[in-house]
Image (cartoon, rainbow, N blue to C red; front, side):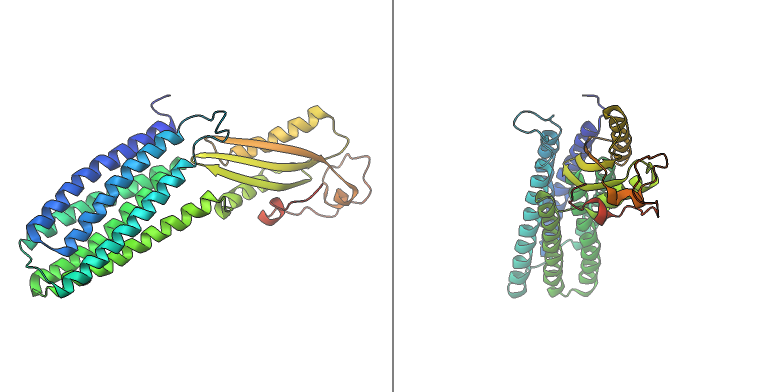
Length: 328
C-alpha cells in the first residue's frame, strides 16, 4: 500500500498521538508524585486513558484498512466504532474514579508540595494535547476516520480541563486553601465522564447505522446541482458508513422507453455525482426504474412522444424525498 494512502496516513497520525501520549503520561505522573495534588492526579489518570485508548485506536485503524473479504463483504471499517466505544467507556470510568478520589480527599486531605513545578508540567502537557487534538480531528475529518476524530476530541477535552486545572492550581498556590484541590478533581472528573458519554452516544448511533443528516444533505445538494432532465425521480436512498468507506444505494427513475445502454449511461452520471461527495473509498449501487404516467407533469424530457400530461414544474430534491421508500 502506498505510503501516501489515506489508511497509512491515519496510522502515522495515530502513532504520533500514542508516542506523545506516553511522554505526557510520564510528565504528569512526575508532577503528581512531586506535588501529591489530587487535581494533578486527575490529569495523570486521564493520560493513562489517552495512552490505552491510543493503542486501541491504532489497532482499530490498522484493522479497518484491511480490504474486504468473503467474511467481511463491507470491509473492516466498523472496528473503528468499537475502538471509539472502548475509548468512551475508559473515559467515563476514569471520570468516575477521579470524582471518587476528589470526594475522599475532602475528608482526608493531603499535604501539597512543589506546586509551582507541577503547574508548569501540567500546562506544557495541556499545550501539547491541544495541538495533537487539533491535528487528529483535522486528519480524521479529512480521511473520514471516526477513531481519529474521537481521539482528537478526547485530547481537546483533556486540554480544556487542563486549562481549568491550571487556573485552580494557581488559586490554590496563592491562597493555600487545600479544599480547592478536591473541588477541582470533582468538577473535572464530571467533565471527563460527560465526554465519555458523548463519545459512546455517537458511536452507538453509528453502530446501528443511524442516518447521518450531514452526509444526506451533501448528497442532496450534489444531486440538485448536477441534475439531468432524464433523472425523473430518485428515491430509496440509503447510506452505510464503515470506517472511512461509504456504501450508497438508490433507485433512479428514467423514461420507460430508454434502451439499456442509455439507461446505464444516465446511471453512471448519477454515480459520478455521488462519488464527488465521497472522493475516497465509496461504492455506489443504482437500480433503475421505468417512469409511470403520474411523473409526466414533473418530467423535463422535452422530446418524449409518450407524454400523458403537460409539464408543470421542476421540484428540487429534498432529503425526505430521496430517502422515501416507494415504487416507481
